[in-house]
Length: 194
Image (cartoon, rainbow, N blue to C red; front, top):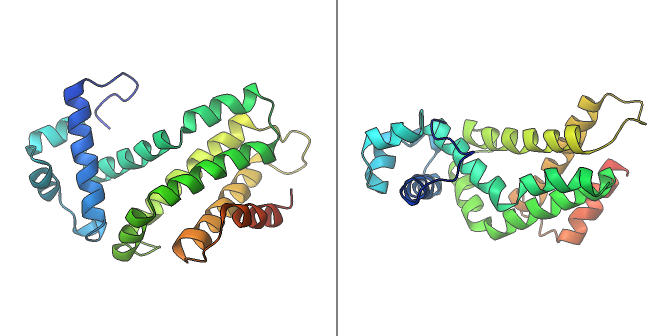
C-alpha cells in the first residue's frame, strides 16, 4: 500500500480511504471481485484514478486494506499486546481472538453473506481473506503464546490452530449452522483438544 498506515491519517486522507473501502465493500456485495475495476471504484467513490493510485497499487491492494480495517475493528493489535503481558494460556488467548472474530462476523453477517453470494469459497478474493486471517492468527501464536514445552514444531501448531479456527468460523457463518458463541467454543475446544 502506498499510504503509510503507521502514521495518523489526515481528515482528508481518512475520508478518501473510507470512501474507497466503503465502495469496495459495496461492490463486493454486488458482484465477483474479478468483475470489479478500478474505474468503477473511482466512479462510485467520486475520486479520480490518480487519487486511487496515490493510495493503492491496484484493487488487490485496496481489498487488503479492507481486511486491515477489519483487523482494526477486532483490535487485533490489542490481542497481540495483552497476550504476553497477561501471561495468558494458549487456550485463553485463542478464546479472546476467537470471540473477537466471531463478534466481527456477527456484526457484518449481511455483508459477508452478500460477498459470499458473489464470490465462491475458492475464489481468489475469499482465499485472500482467509489467508489474511490465517496470517494474523499465526502471528499471534508465534509471538504471543508459549508452546516451548510441546514437542511439536511451532509452525505446525500455528497451522493447526489457525485452520481449525477458520473451519469453525466457516461452519458457523458460511454454512449457516446457527451455532451460538458457546457452541462454537465447544466445537473449537473439542477439535483442538485443549
